[in-house]
Length: 344
Image 1 (cartoon, rainbow, N blue to C red):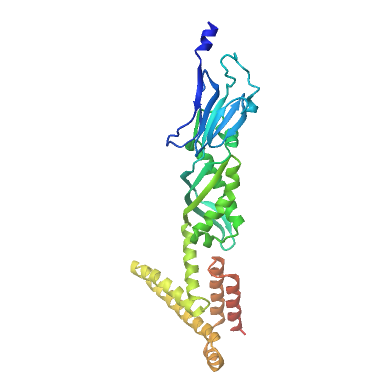
Image 2: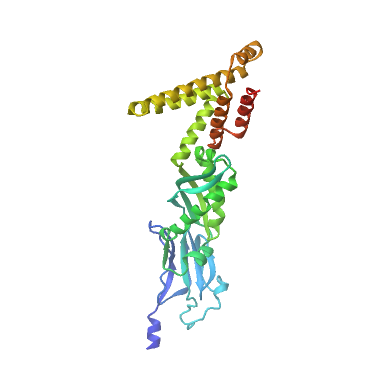
């Protein structure tokens, strides 16, 4: 009876895998109650690798090609238990196929804003998203570390782990690149390259190769975006303080108009705006005089009259702009020195 059962066993002559387009990364060839015939054919296609596992250990890895499975070709498997030599079937192993083609358009993103350190703005909270491509490069490592003995393992199964690696390494990627945040926001290719450099070794630890990465969007919190807009406005007027005061006045006019239209505190707003405009005009005249040369410079300096209180108020305003990041320390020091000269 036992002999009849043995005779009924199926012997495998051809081992191959035709991939379905379902995102499968690893697939175990069905081996239930079957043995690999000595001399059987193994076909590994261009987009695949095959791994032989005997008694829980990887015995061999096959690259693309066609192979005849025989004891003389597989010295690592010659110690397998041999059944009756009449059937010439010494193999009873597990065979796993792995897809090595690129898995494209895999999404990544920051569900919540993350905090990074920036040399211009200090701590910055940002959100970003994009996609990436990867493939299996080391089938043995991926088998031992990730897929294991499962019948199949898909892209969806590993997706959460890879997304976590991306989020975990964003801050480190930006820090190691020494790229200012403004450059990252305006040059997303630079950001993507920094992420790729940081993440490639992490993917390699589990047998994967990161083929490419894109950053499709980087967004700032609203309050930081306002400061950035002001800094851009300062860049447009350069170091001309008179133009800066005109710029600030132009920014304030719409707010004043809104307050006047509401019907509350109109007189007080008008007085405050009038005082601000007067001080801005006086300050602009004095700073412009400092840029002129010869007789024009001396005449303008002599004609300018600024009260000490106005000087101090202006210094306080400049200090606030420096704290917000609109003025650099060097710009602040230069304007401070010019204003203090007026007190002498």
